[in-house]
Length: 312
Length: 247
Image (cartoon, rainbow over all chains, first blue to last red; front, side, top):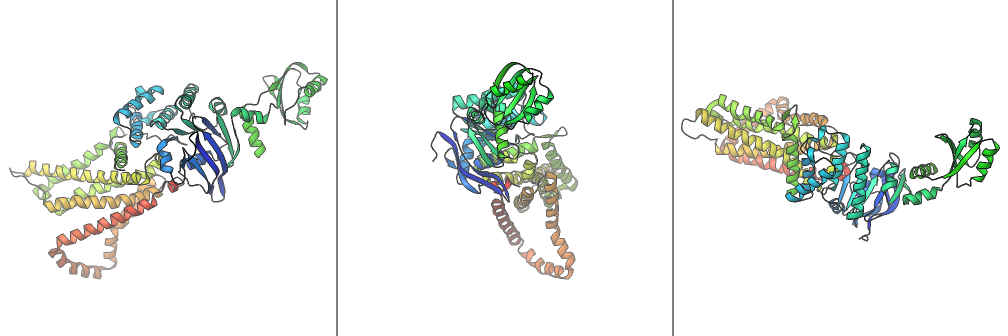
């Protein structure tokens, strides 16, 4: 058995379809009660990883344990204790919202009272209780997504897999859902395995993130660790006189990776962490009026893009 | 397991019977069938409806045809509407999902048959009863219900195979119609292909059928039961979620 404080543990996990290595030897752990963000471009292997962890696919090699259960031999136990919102909302659109939740309550053998109570709590939290009798088919994408999240939580799972849960939600709903996820993890000790393209979202709520590309896990750590790995390798210059010729000269420098103008300020990206002195000296020599120079802080998105670039 | 199978049956029925299509709920279609097979046709046939084997074919056959739509939707529909993966990610076992789907369509057909047959009894008694209670020949009635059950299981398991392979409901329905038509037309094709041999065979069988009709019918039921069990076992072997996810 995996120790209780580890909810997910993979060891050199592989999944191959013909010549395609959808998941290529990934090894990571997710601690219980934390939010783990799984980031990667389209087709990187995120959904396949979730399918492997739920025992919906068999690994070609390697192993994984979820909540202490082996994904190959004890997948039924994993599915009993987990909730999953996969690529599609998976709602029965010919049924009402209430019937959808009731169905999943029945699947998990909740009593009639438990189902009624849980449906009310979840739908009230999502602001959908008044519309519970409506057929889901007529609902907006955002409402369906909220209902799908509610369905995932219907049986109080110990671990939830959420594949792009905020996709299609308006900013208010996304923010509400993020708060709910954080509360779930912090107050109730629920572990959340989340895939998202929204890196700002991952940065806000994830305790740890893993970056996957072409089936390989290229980095795992807290968002801060990932950002630090990338360093603060950009400088922002507030001033005037950023002529195109100056920008071109900067671009031609060997340690510069990119030069851009953002909101009339000059942003210079370097290959590695760089002192501002040399740049200031160069710009002053070209007649640029410098008011201020700030070290840029790499966002998770910068770190993510840099990691992918390194991989390429 | 039983509770899980009932959950699936309940879900299937809710989706098919109570969903609204063109402003009409699914149960209205059932009422129409029962109205035709259980009221209109018995009224037109008179008291003979309860003793004529042809009536059995009518109230047993039509509902079985109705299962095609439901069973075609079983997996292809879930796949088309992107609900299959979510269903497979639940705690339900493969067997519970499969048996729930099969049972939903079999019971659907069987209950329509039963309702149609009982409506026929009421219609005949109200219209032609003349003070005495008229009912089907018990062998015909219970034999008919058993036949519906066995044939519906066969149709459903064939439907499950087709539905598992199809990516859309339309494709499943087309394939299912073709396969079932082929199965039921095989005897006619054989008779056409070998007319003399078929006539000889029928002439040889006729006396045996007359003498031992009950035995022959029971033998047919036994064969059907065996085929049903085999088909269910094959369907169970075919139904693996790790395989379905990739299809």
